Length: 250
Image 1 (cartoon, rainbow, N blue to C red):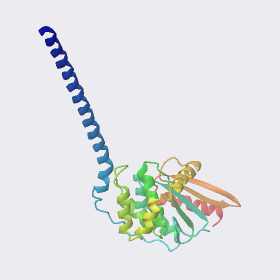
Image 2: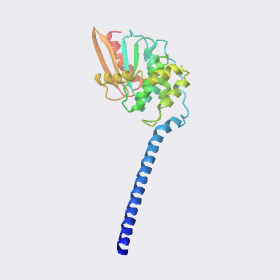
Image 3: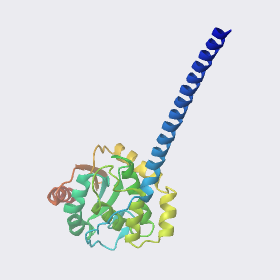
Image 4: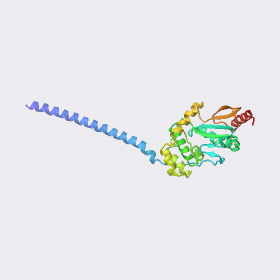
């Protein structure tokens, strides 16, 4: 009888030991799941509390009054140049800093060239598309080019958080946009379809990298197309434009 009681006690002790071990395992599993969930929540929540940081001023630019949303110049100009660009692209920033202003002053302001900016979708990453949407939303208030400038002025790298939603909103605030209208546009992804269309149109036109430029003009009723690739100097644009004008007899 005593031996049976001892045997029962040992079995109960083993069962209790197993039960406690299973309980510890469950608690450890629950703890790990909870920590993982808190970490994931932190990743989503932290960007909303992370400081936006200083917003750099855009360089002062003088553009003609003939601005229509994302286009500058006379729509009936002899030559049309369409830029396909990505706000995260360093070479696009180089074109903006070194060539764009001279191109506008030399050929757009006098009505020779009609210049249009297109995004190239989310070519480099999601922030590319977000920045383009912000620029188009600013365009609703006649400030596309001002937003275009401040976005490039605050480029810090590719997919590094330079163009988070909160920073793009900060750019809009710095430009003193109507924030109710801007936020309604931006939060509704009003221009998401246009961003996708930009990229599709660019690919159809043969664009493979940014920045790239499609120059079109008409000679004797035939439309001519020239593809200019890369952050070229004003000299390269001048050579192509002057050659087109000569071909047109202008």
